[in-house]
Image (cartoon, rainbow, N blue to C red; front, side, top):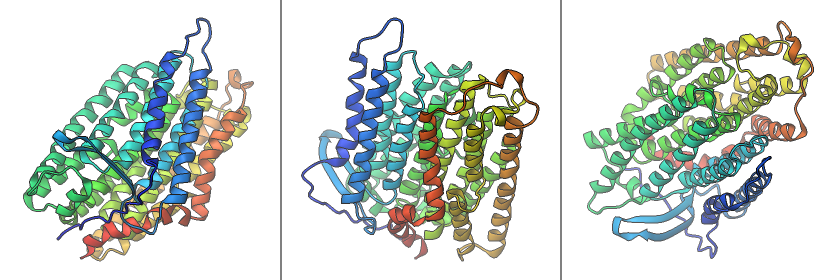
Length: 510
């Protein structure tokens, strides 16, 4: 069985829009270290330049997709190909399809808002905002690369800014968390590289082009080994149990803007790569191992929810919540049909917005209270009523309240499993019941956290703290309004990727 050669739409565009989107932040980052340092106070220029560049970049993304991308076309559009290092077959090869389009926009939005959330950063601000700009370029390149080696270089590049952002601007145990993050991801990257190169060498001719690799559709024991290498490599980033343990430490020590990037973008790279490589490139093996992915997803959902109960640190509780919610992505991918994969895509977009909102608002009240310990907080609802309203709204979105994007994405995953006749009725029933346990646990640990943090005994020292500022209101609304819009009108997101998810699922149903 073959995954089929992907259609490629060469628009013949004279201007390399995708290259501009990718390179603009990275080139702008080179300017920041040249800015003059101020001795007694932090200069606003690094922050303002980063904010302006990322705003322009996001508008470019949205403008290019709105005017030049046809979401009804299931193949690769806006193709840009330049021989970069021909001796090793490396091409600067870019393109966009339904899988990458929504995630590129999500990446641009969350990164822009993370700069807005970094307004009070003063220490080494030039380096800090330069790293955020480099991170923005690397993220976009991961989603838009159509050459395996280029994809891998981007995958590695985005690790460096995150490591430094945690190691320099993180909390008390930042070195431990940053080191654990880089060790996990470095080992995972080695498996990704080996699997990808093995596929590139497996045919009659050596190729790194993703469309050509997809057309090979390796099977048998060789395809199984490549699939497992990708699964472990990308599963670390997702994060998939038991490869998830770096995430709570990283979130616990990272500042709020970096946590927004981790939850809003980096975890989505794992889900995107699983769809691109495991499902699209190795459909035969995926059909065999799909039930295992569903089981792993259920473990993620229940295990993450149970561990969230045990956390007395707000960010660690939200981190384990992310482990739980990303389990729905695994279940959707394992559903081996278009509806399940569509639910997985929508869950990535939805969780990216919701988790980024939760970590941002956590940063807002941490800035006021200087603590993330749930037992050390209480009565904040009276002191910070607007902050409470935003945190409660993001919590309701996270627990899949109808009318919010989390509900639509998770119910789509459920429907994808129930409609899949390839699974036995017993397997489907066990899957649905187990996932439902996670759905029941989620409001319990989220609403109990809201009760303990914002109600309970009031702490006198926090009686006069300032509520959310206009800048913070704009950031919060920029994340929660799309969550509400997608919840009410999910077609606005689903129309971007539906043709691509249908095409990916087609070989799985033959």
